[in-house]
Length: 430
Image 1 (cartoon, rainbow, N blue to C red):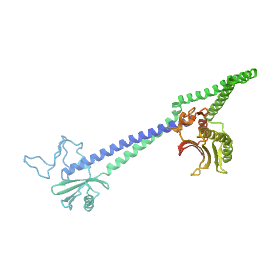
Image 2 (cartoon, rainbow, N blue to C red; image 1 turned 135 degrees about the horizontal axis):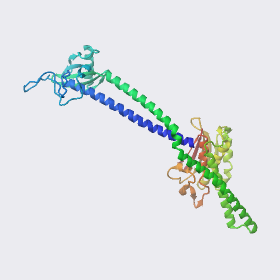
Image 3 (cartoon, helix red, strand yellow; image 1 turned 135 degrees about the vertical axis):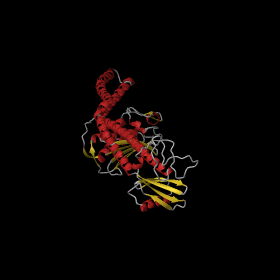
Image 4 (tube, helix red, strand yellow; image 1 turned 180 degrees about the vertical axis):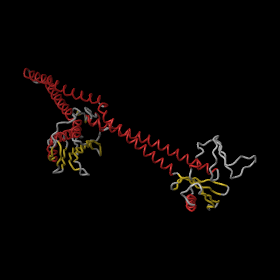
């Protein structure tokens, strides 16, 4: 149980860390890509605004190609004057590689300008331009180039900018950030594994104290129970047995049974329970463990059916498996409806890798809420499991906890469900 708790702590911490790292690395790379694309789009806008040319850089935020004049109207090809500095410097126009395609209002290419790029010829520029015009898109990426379209007095202008350097930078940044993130993740996971024992130490100490208390209390209570039992027998020898002495002996028997099951549960939940693991015929084990309850069911007006597949073998503790069958069958007989039916089945699962033990009983009013609570210690649902037509059901509310401990000690799973008027407990034995 302690190792299982430690593994669960490590897994939860590792998953949470992985989610945080994905969010951080993804966010950083997302911002980087967005900013890179935004800068490229701003450059494309500047070139489009200036009719396919890069304006001269003005440190005060003004970009122009020629001196201003006093005329009231400017030439349509005159450079636009931005209202503010866009974060580019004197070298930007020389570092930016681009080519321009011009088209008329009918979509026919009229001119190309490849003077600012070496990797694209005029014919290739025309093909790029046609591809964009045919697609109808106003911006996007084509090969190694990011493009954007704009409208002019004579038609359209399409500017293609070489983004290979930006793409390589983005890829390198992604690889470096992922490598650093992976290294940090592995390092932190190792630290979590190393310090996980210290993190769960309070829980471990509490669990150890609980087990020790159950063991000590069990041994301490046995002595007064033995004395009370002996004194009761003396009283019955001095005077005849009466309802009081009979009640005392019944309660002594009940307490002895409770102590036995508590100690059995504590033993099963130890880190390494003393189980004798070996191959055995589980079909015979289940049949002979369930058969004695046939008479008990008949005395209560109920029917017990045992449906066991022949010749199945299993690697585990035969005694513990027999105890599991007894607990589940007794529980089903006890809580089945009046004149109800109990079915004990053993079969191979659909995937062929598990042996399933299924014990079901009729139950017109199944427990409400979370059925996994039925495996909690001392839990009994009063409305549907503790009473039936005024008849009080015996038991300590601990049998299903022992059944769960047995199944877990075999690294298997047990579950319960209410379906079609039946309560079904299934142990998937791996």
